[in-house]
Image (cartoon, rainbow, N blue to C red; front, side, top):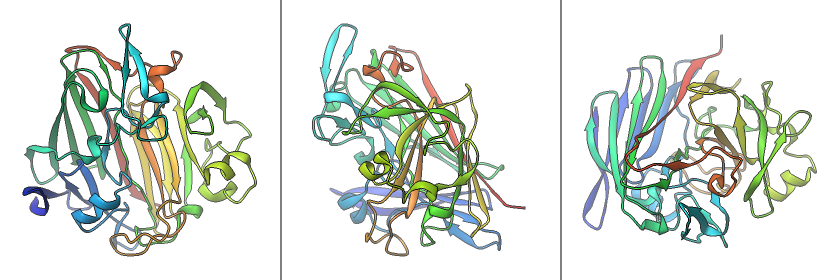
Length: 342
């Protein structure tokens, strides 16, 4: 375990924790409970950093793009920044046009989290989101634990409890490149996602409760294939959104394997395991020209697999409910498991 000061916000120290199982290493900072780096051996045994991010706190404060952070109270877009709960309408922050995105203007990604405990292979951080924060009802006590396991997984466990009914939709917003953070763009990275349907969105990327079966479409990743197969096509969706930014309705229930990414360049395989109902696939173009930890990023520098709720679930009654009840513990787990191609 290596604990050090990463920077200061108004005199408050932001800490960085290095956790490791002796094979892979992760660094987590207390600003946003952010996964700042994740070092994984490639097929030649060289450690590659497989998440995008920054070397300084100042860079995170200026332009984080949620990189590696815990996002909440509710990830993704909530339509018209409002919802009904127990017969009452709540208006939350409009930080994305008329809508609310990733918890509002100052979501969990912009909070300084407190340290609960830590060891060589794990760190647990906590944050208390008070009643009325960004418009959300009730006070939620949240803990997130990052663990590097003996199975070469980076595990993220969420635990929360609220003093009243509210909604909660957490995710980690890591931007992955298993060619290495300073490696080739992800277009040739192979990907599979165990989801038969995607959540349709309108031109403002807001879901209205409709699902689309992926069979025969550009969204079909049921069989592993390169991420970039269709990205140069004239498909209306890809042109409009400049690539993938869509939630998959995952098959199965409980903690299970839902995705596999594989690089033929590095030999690294990353499997995603989760108990969540959905995963947002995002292939980032917004980083182009931005300076990261070891390089200047290019188009297609990374992809996201953000596990969690369906977008706008509170306003789509046919979607699994994001409501958590007063006093009832909320628990969820997602892991990214690493291995090498044979």
